[in-house]
Length: 230
Image (cartoon, rainbow, N blue to C red; front, side, top):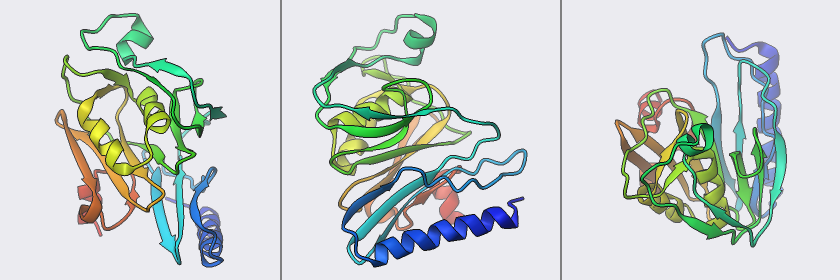
């Protein structure tokens, strides 16, 4: 159960966000710490990401609810840095994979929250207004394709922030690479107010965006399941 005090704090944050939006602050505002500190039940997963629009202002935010303390750092990521894709097996176990590697030089600077180190992103936004966040999705299953570059999912999120400015580009990347790691799905938003839910079900990408995503919120069920629950 969520306590009354936590609900009151969440309502206070929501009221503040709506006040900021009503004051006409332009552009995409990243709520770097929109962590509501809601306390979930012992078996609950309660992370959420969202985008709100009002009077030309856009606010994107995310809360990270965990059953234990999650350490991390806020990282400023610079332009002009050379990087290369790596899979979870390569990073964690030193095992080679048949997949080709993808290298890039960061085009955009970004600010991210990282739980391990630089380039291993839990969420963030770049200077072009691209916003990417993760949430646990228990039924997630990533695709297998040895012909495509393979990314540990945290590094893929940094690749997106380094390289792209639009949700359409994020959706295209989800088709062009394969991801591995933990059971996550992803919420993306851009400075134009576009959003996408990026999920991998039964080893296939499920990409929801545009008119197919009328409610710009994603939590810990598939987007389709959350819509059915409305």
